[in-house]
Length: 554
Image 1 (tube, rainbow, N blue to C red):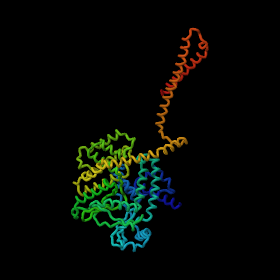
Image 2: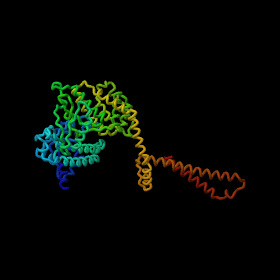
Image 3: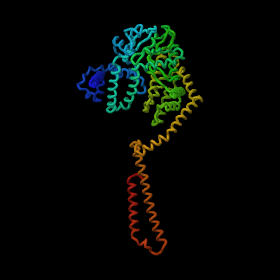
Image 4: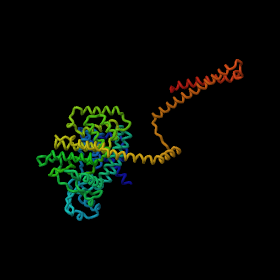
């Protein structure tokens, strides 16, 4: 416990020092972070003030290490939340970390695979091909002769990430209390989302499963391949895959013997098939993760980040694309509602106006010149303006589309992305309205309804039991209570007025009728109680009238 506390305090010192160094000392003061350290924080010399805020954010994340670099890379997918100039810098985040020693690599592999390195591999290069914040990659050869790459997780990275995430959560919760804009950007919710993604990424078993799934779904896809994962040589900390002998896609140019048009078309088609047909796609297809063989075949690597789209989401996405192409505001708005991007309390008129303004932006531009990724990103920005939460997989989709369009435009500027996407959209729309699929959906909804009906008596009994036990909770806002009280006051005052008026009328009618039935004075009329009652009733009547009108709730 003491070691953990010391580690946390030491890390707090590092974070505070880095914040001051890159010109974010005001955040330290606003959060009161200096009170959390036992000794005075040593301030490093401030960075050049001429650097932009975005560049200083990138340098800060790089200095703070693996956790912050990975969170920054994940944040670069959220174009719906952060401005473009920040996203551009975040995309340039580099893992400026040295490689770790070969002996450590050897020890990790032997512990994980429970065998000596010499028996596991025929050859193993001690110098890594690349080193990153999470791990590093070595070339090797299996005893059966296959050339492979072995990714080994950095020692101690799990504990480092655990410490950083705990401190980040603490800081963000503190920031929500003290800094207004933090809550507006929902940074705590965003942090939890990123933290889960990071925990998945450092577990190489997840990456192996992602790679295998994409490889299986691409088995019938021509010209796009993924490396084979060797499960016998893979664990949470070690991942062994086929070695990829290829050229980075942005370097696959005509002068190097590649056909740029074919490469761009095959890459885009393969990615859109993953997105629109299978609904499971590579979440980070930047040039460093896409290679090309001499035969113009595409090979994807690094499957730590993937996106998932349900059938309904893909069909609604197709509606969205068709709405954008047809410049139909109503269809675009309908697609946003069906995708659960827009919540029930949104001002629909204002949302429609913003979407129509977006339609006018693209009105005079030929469809071939419209960037699908930019159009989708504009839609997400509109949704964010109305405090709508865009699902994680859709933001990852937007990021993937941006990467695909950037690569295609650099290789084949004349290739029209919309022409490649449109056939997939038509297939999805056809699937949506296919009678057989419609019947299956109705059957599924009917079964769900029958399940609800089946458990209705049990749920009703539980609700009644809660009511009897006083456990039923009803949430009413203060504003709603105020309106409710006003309505009850008006109703009760009108009811009281009516009752008093009715009783007064009955008494008066009785006196008049009684006097008219006989010419002789009766005992009833001779009793002074009637006069007294009339006086009291009249006084009560006028007092209630005065009280009601004075309250202003009549």
